[in-house]
Length: 333
Image (cartoon, rainbow, N blue to C red):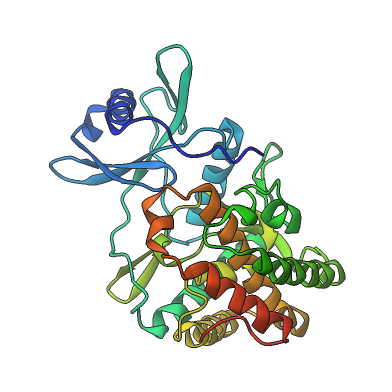
């Protein structure tokens, strides 16, 4: 898959697409249109006199129409099972995913969602929130393991190659900034060890299936001590314990990370079970995710998020690789 996923349209052009999109919905949804964020996809806040909605305009070269429909199928199934997740709104023509055009050559897909109340937590969040996140993640996994997906269901595949190879979905980790030649040797050694362990671990249905794949702080909403999960844009086939690694994305090197992991596991085990083999693989999943985010950092180097990581983030990754190769958990200071 190409990693040319960054949106190249200007904010003015994206707003034109948002106006075009909202014209396709019933009058009850018409209101003020404001760009909320543009990290990967562009998300607009739609505010009417009574309610708020979120309009997501998908970036190019990442998901097909069927990919997006499949995401919404899972969200619908989760909602029907009692799990609170974003729900798509039908256009006047009864479509969940709408096609937008800007001129003859530019096409985008868009989805309008009901608004989820809450505030985004920061790295100062209480560890108790990670217990709640662990519980929610376990419920998602339990649903995934028993759900019969539609025949045409199609989502992105997250495995070792698609995450860490030079042709990975998010690019080549070697393009991450601030890496030195000697750092490559350490990271490559860690990748080889991860691959060896994953080969032994396998992809049986009790360990590998449909996951959120990006359950990190920026995709959580806190509302009166409850956590809502949003942004299923990266959901796909992966190892279930990858969702733990994703929960601490970008922040594995912080002093609080071990406490976060401990509480996440406590919450997960409160309603589910993690077997010994999965526990043994946790360091590998955490290290794999960190290197995967190195690839993201390289392919998204011009974004505000990537630049906010600073010039020491790559050095911290190398330090964590050394901890991992020394058979330690690659988190914390």
